[in-house]
Image (tube, rainbow, N blue to C red; front, top):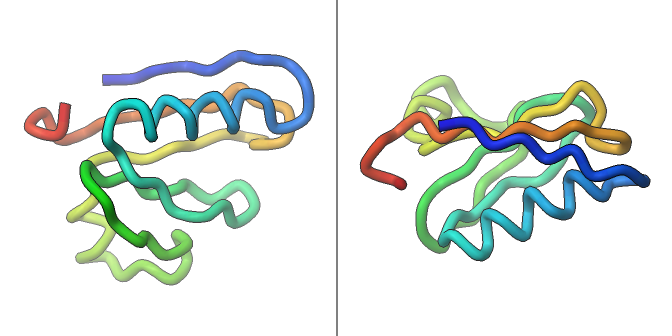
Length: 84
């Protein structure tokens, strides 16, 4: 499942994607440049992408990505069906 956020303005699409996560019961990790941000269903503390091991990355329910979180667009990809 992919959701695209196209809001304009600095970090507007990113903030809308974060709101979507909160409203739909997903925790999100912290931003680290243009690296993906991990998503997990439920209340979790998720490390920045570069601090996640390969096995931790495989456990994620999805990711938030963007070429530029500052200007958007921002993409949420939920990869585990049971998380939806």
